[in-house]
Amino acid sequence: MSNDSSAEPAAGSSGSNESVTKIEPIRMPTIEEMRAQEVWNNCAVKSVASGVMGGGLGLMMGLFMGALDNPIMHDTMTGRQQFVYTAKQMGQRSWSSCKTFAVMGLVYSAAECIVEKARAKHDIINTAVAGCVTGGAMSARGGPKAACMGCVGFATFSVLIEKFFDRHT
Image (tube, rainbow, N blue to C red; front, side, top):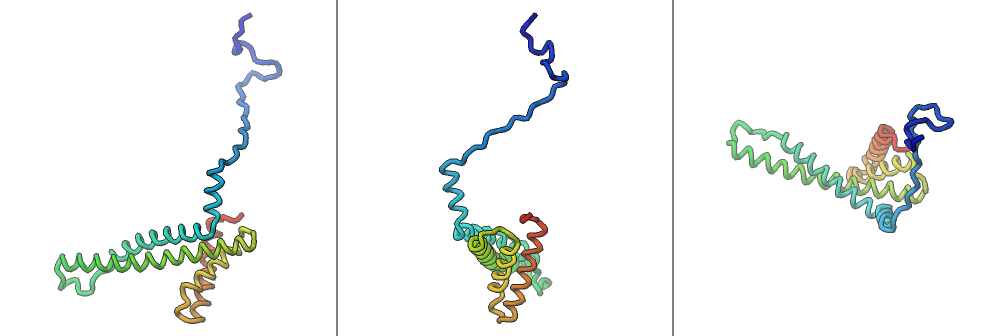
């Protein structure tokens, strides 16, 4: 008899080629991975990163929306004047949107992180509170009524988006 293992099925097997699922061992994180996780768990780092990303998003949206603005007197403007006017509009709109989205991202992320650390829970209430704080802060210049409406509106929007993406299951 030869030592060929494919010649005969092993005792107790049905002869079919069943693959056995191999369980991989759990890999412990390295020191560098743990330190990086500690850095990203810091509320200030999360908030600044969200502010920078929000500013980038606002910049892009402002460029797009500024490009859609048409001058009122477009019939009397030359092509060069229209180009200069559109470029200025895009610049103004993009800078304004950049600042707004940066502040919005920073405030929302900071509020959610602080509430989450204070409550030691990760749930939809954190989202609602962060939305309320952000909406109230963003609309506070309009007075108390505007701040309350901003709070309710942004909290509702935040909860709806959170439910849509279903992060907290």
